Image (cartoon, rainbow, N blue to C red; front, side):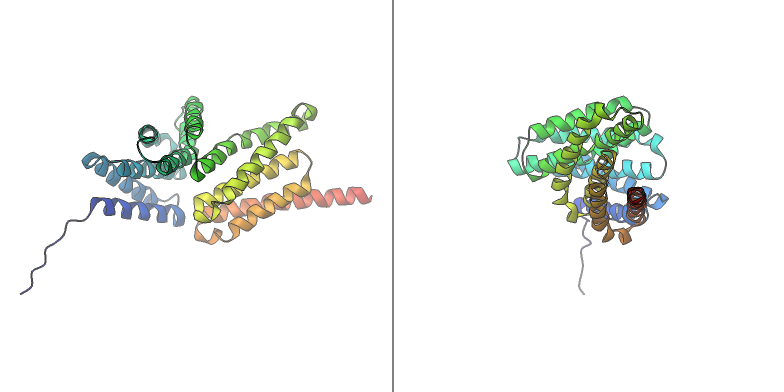
Amino acid sequence: MRWWRRSTPDPSAVADGLRDRADHLALTRPETPEALAAARDAAAAAAELVRTVGDLAGRRRLARALWRETSALLLCGRGHETEGPARRCWETCTLLLTARGLGDAAQDDELTGEVVGYLGVLTAACHAYGRPEDVPRLLAAGEAAVARSAGPRTEQARARLDVFPLAPAADAYAAARIAGQWPLVALETTRAVVVGKRAAETLRRHAHEGPTEVVEFARALQLVSRLLCVSDRIEESASALDEAITAMSGWARRGPSLAAFLQGLRAERAGLDALLAHRARRGGA
């Protein structure tokens, strides 16, 4: 007779498996109770791992899991519930940033990239649970982290931070143009285009890594396109959107959120076609 000893599951492997399931549902079934439950399970497993082990790897798992839980709550329209996981995520991120310098330069680079990568969701959560005044503090911490690090992930983090102000800037410059105040913002708009193009170039190098990265790249191009449109550089604006659409086309079938983003890019591009056609008719009149 052969006896088999039942092995105890490795807690790290369990946490990673739950993380992978949460990632899969976030992509294929976002905005569903199942996706939110999976994200919460992954966060609970990561928290237990930190409680029992408490090493750096476990804290990295926890920060990512709490980021995923915060994102899932936002997608499910439960932003008012994000304060707990969002704050815990940032507290964990603060510990990760403190741990930099204890390892090698490559690890410091990775930690900087990870923490800054969470800021998009965390700042959205601040608005959702009614603390928008916390956003500048988080972004300032991201800026400080980038200033103290170096490497490809830090460069990616720098690009992510540079994209943050582009959306409100594009809206503000468009409003100024409509109000007849274009000369006051023309130079600022040109500078914003330069910053956006530089950020997009950096993010392009990471676009193949996953859905988050390709969306970041396409979003940067979308914002550059809007700034170019405000600047009356319509052909360049269209070219930027074309590149964004091309980047997203291979990913859209992987999940409804990606498909919806691509649809939005195409609708925006159709608007530029209408504008170009109107210009052509006016020029030929």
